[in-house]
Length: 233
Length: 117
Image 1 (cartoon, rainbow over the protein chains, first blue to last red):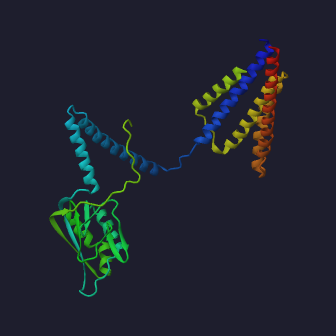
Image 2: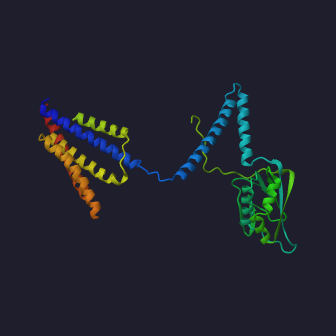
Image 3: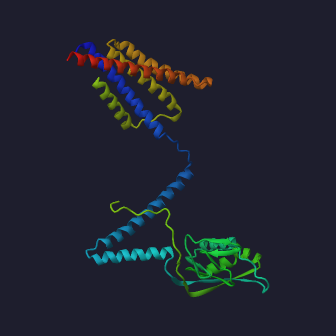
């Protein structure tokens, strides 16, 4: 190879090297650009706190699943079947597919006077549900309809439907399970939702009950967004 | 020629590994510069295939084109005219021309080689 040719190759290679680097940098820049952190110290601290909390939750979850894994990997097959069954039972209980009982409060909603019965506004029922959830109610049923995460409360042809069943007849009864019945009762009776019922000529009352039994949810639960986990993942 | 391709790949790998990023407001200039550099490289390859490669012309062209393209884009930003389009147009057209010339030269070389064999 002559000196000239060698030089030519070196020059071309050097230029190609530079172009390659430029291309890579351009690619890097356009695909993950530098984003400036504009948070102040308070925001950083809050997000740190949040991340820490998340970490704790994740740790707890890991522990839970490790225990579950332990259960599964016990030598006897029966054990793992039991573990699966227990997990399924827990999941069903969480989803509201089993009847539950415990201490709680019993709320009744009745018309004030014996004249023409006023309508129950679904808006108010939803508001009451929100307040109940806010004050740490664990499980709720409205006139025998168990409220789960997807239970609709809405108006159909002028009537209020819960879980697609009408709850027309008075008194409307709500069974609410909670750990602190006395506190929940006080809070609900003085809540905005109770006031909204009163404004519609409805009397709302609540009393503590030592043992309440809530029915299970019987309707279908459509699964829209979940997918089955693949075996090996 | 193989060394040039190899060093292009080495450059790409180096760039990716170094994780260098430039501020987004300058990425326009870099893209123009990349286009200019590519154009010069292809021009160099053409000259190499043709046999009239001159390293002085190549090196000066390489850096001068990059600076000129980036400068044009810079000027365009301050004048409110999209001058970088001129650079893109010029370099784009030349890129295609040069690649076409290279293709023809390579094909004719290949034909000659086959006839002679």
